[in-house]
Image (cartoon, rainbow, N blue to C red; front, top):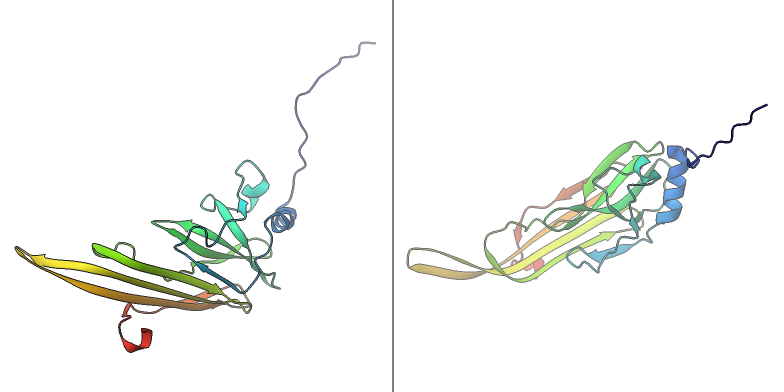
Length: 193
């Protein structure tokens, strides 16, 4: 009788289901304590708590656009919600909601910052704050102050500007994110002093 000895360098890796990975990810990433307030312009104002690993089971849950996750919002009956950054000219705080089978419900940037690309302005101050409350209501205020130079030919004029935009919204019980952004307003008006 001839016995053949085989050596294998293959490692057995247990196949994990999406539902099992959801539990693992929530445990690894953790929940955000609400209410949460942060300055969207300050990179140290809100830190990511989890770096998505593209060489792991994270690929079962997170698309390629999601690189770092701040955390999950407190668990709800009908959906999961997590906060991460969408990358653009700044890091935009974004909430994504998924149903309990991890199918996307909604995704929304929750920062009212709409001043990027604004005229050639000498910036004096910029304020972009975001609040997420315990009842999952969202508020954001973006205030921008600066000096603009305009003119044609040999005549130039310099004037100060102060603009503000607000965003208000909420996540409903089904995971839809409803936000409404105000029009750009002059914050030198009495409402914003």
